[in-house]
Amino acid sequence: MVNQNSSSSGSFPEVTGSKDSKPTISAPVGNPPSTLQSKDIFEGSGKEAITTSVLEVHYTLMAWSSGTLVESSWDSGQTATFPLSGVIAGWQQGIPGMKEGGRRLLVIPPDLGYGSQGAGGAIGPNETLIFVVDLIKVS
Image (cartoon, rainbow, N blue to C red; front, side):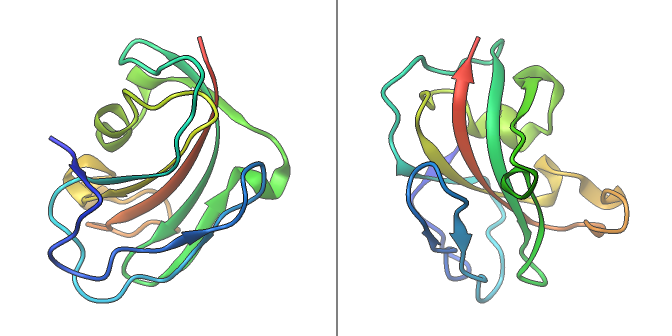
């Protein structure tokens, strides 16, 4: 289940920036939420993503614990394309229902992200992930 627009633990990250440009994420304050949180920044009007969709996206990732930007596809100017079924559970639960042209903030707890393993040096064990996802194309 995805909680929309709310966080009872810490301060929900704020996202600024215009459509078709790299978003800016404010560093969060306090303890991260323990459940998946979702907030539409811009609602899209195109095709809707479902669990079996292949997505083309721009994304920006911040680590909750440090408030530092981990990576952004906007920096390379290259979108990422992948089947929704092949990514972390937080995306699999938080992206369906999103439409092309939309921008969504996802705050993903460790159990729906990279868990106790982390991901390389950039994402430590038990890290809460903050993603801003721009959905470019659904196929």
